[in-house]
Image 1 (tube, rainbow, N blue to C red):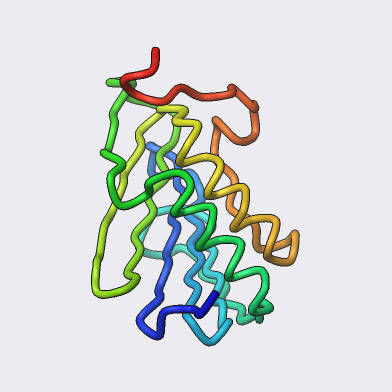
Image 2: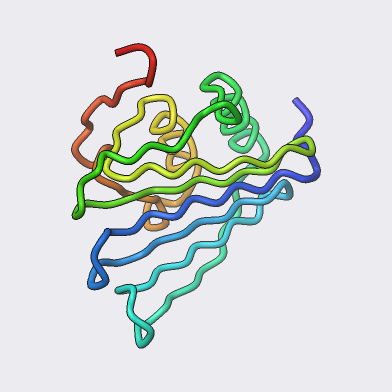
Length: 144
């Protein structure tokens, strides 16, 4: 499977309160990955940045998982909870761009994509959020 030259995937996970950490990863078509960690969301927060590589076959698996789970047709969801966390994924591929934001919302198809991304990266750069940590299983809107 050829990897689209415009491929870019970003995942951001953060708590809903300002004293919680924010993590971000970005992956590009050439296998370059960037990891960004902010210890809290205030302006004086320490930020750590690291770069890593992802093998071509792992990028292909991520793309396949995005296609299997219809990422470009997924919608954002908000549970209405004030606390908790949120996760956002933005992707560009084959000239299409799309963003999904989940606020305290376990969404199986989305979570499956993030699991594929996490399994392709070094463990210390994997993106956590509640529905993955708690393995809530998630729902797929319209299939409840």
